[in-house]
Image 1 (cartoon, helix red, strand yellow):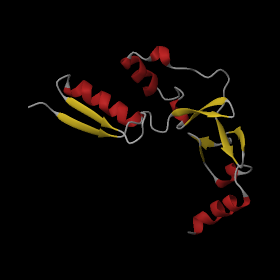
Image 2 (cartoon, one colour; image 1 turned 90 degrees about the vertical axis):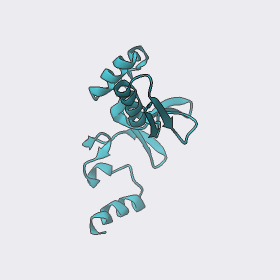
Image 3 (tube, rainbow, N blue to C red; image 1 turned 60 degrees about the vertical axis):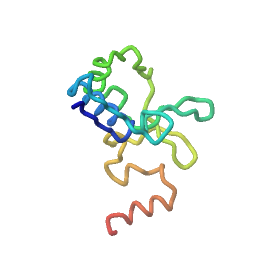
Image 4 (cartoon, rainbow, N blue to C red; image 1 turned 120 degrees about the vertical axis):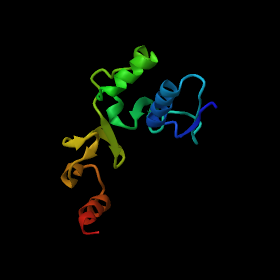
Length: 133
């Protein structure tokens, strides 16, 4: 009997899982990736913002994790990896684009103080009230 597997989600994790299943189960297995969007990649994609391309999604994809380049090499896609030249992670908040605040872990602030200058007064108040919820 031929194995049949459905992977739900065509983001980086779903695509990596489908690849690993294909490797483990062999070419006879049927591995279907189900994705609700009209494209694969999940939250990782490039958008046009005022005529400038911005990569959005998980900042860790920028070859900072050793398993990403290893997977790209295994898939024969190493030549397609684009390294930013001097590009720094940025965030768009309060109608402006600025650098990612320092003291973040994969783009997630490690404290509310790290959000100064990014949030509106309402947003800052909501963050300050969060521990008491």
